[in-house]
Length: 258
Image 1 (cartoon, helix red, strand yellow):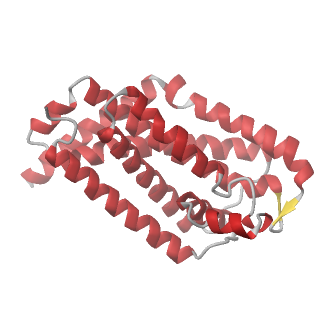
Image 2: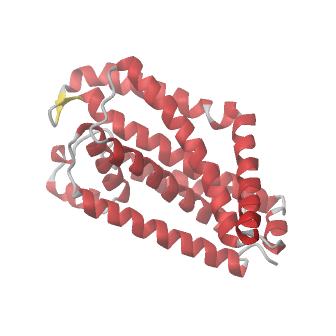
């Protein structure tokens, strides 16, 4: 019981720091994502959507809502963890955690739960915004909830890995700018792959975000262009893989211990 209590205290302390940081600077952590989503709904939903018409049996606005929610979850969970962890590493206080009796997996959980909390808050706001424009559907609540949790967990871990590997502030923005953003926009958020020529379809199938968006679209609208079970297995595999990679790098003090 003492072991569990000590670990819980360590975890809750790290998470509480993340929790208070997110709420304290909400104009930086929450508001920009909310404003961005409002613009997406106005431009793509109302202005462009009215001209696009029907996709896969749904009005264009209905079709893109699941993708927009996933976009907000992916970007906020990733950026929260990478910025927070690298900030701790830059200020040298991450070294205090590593030399403390706190287990590295507890440190990982504290940071990624912070990213998950921020992404869930933003997600709630995006859903509320969506309901101002149209009635938001949830076809399967269980899959809807599970995929939100798994996606925020996956990209929180990816952000942590970026934070561990980063040596300077420029390294924090390279992956989101040149890798994550293109994958998001090419992940089928704004279109169906049925509209693409065959050679582009084959490229999209290698995009992991395409599978995440589709399984969430299934949870919302009941339609998908991929196998749901395979998409779940894919996500679980990468969550476990990233967790062990992050834990290993913290164990050896990669780019932390001098």
